[in-house]
Length: 246
Image (cartoon, rainbow, N blue to C red):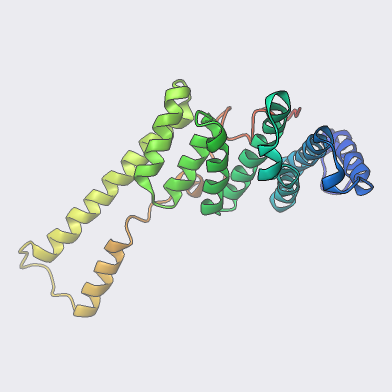
């Protein structure tokens, strides 16, 4: 048995390892046909999915990056019809999977970029909207995050994960407003029982206020994240709750 790979994933890992072995002798990128590029990218994506399932995020991202590299901007612009649809079907999950890895690694700015790439192709992609909203919320971009969550709810109104994130944003804003209120009350409100604060302390308080609320978001509050069937898995074509991949 391969070290670090569960028995139930061994056959899948071996098949994807075989795919990588085949790619070692593959022809140069510019000499590939459209179908060969798409196939090579899909093989990389599948290997990345296995790495992700085994919590090897950096290794997974490396495979997704390589898959995306097979389908650069010029290549995509040259496609149309069925070929373009085939390429998008492989490229989109790679960007979404990258975003999930980056969120787990708290690299939120990069996650936003990958989600935005998907949304330029399909502005109704619920997973891209949802994951970009999560990343933006972590960056303190509350208004932009809310906009993403509301758009994702429009296309997936029954998703409880979206409602939870919207509720979390409301609580975050309430806490910020209360902190703002308490801060100004402490400065301007007469209170003979309160001690005078030094200018240094005043500066520290102002700096803390300017930084905004330091609330822990959902996955920072617990040792393990809350899971939702549709959104906490890396992608619908990647892993189901019973650990099956396609």
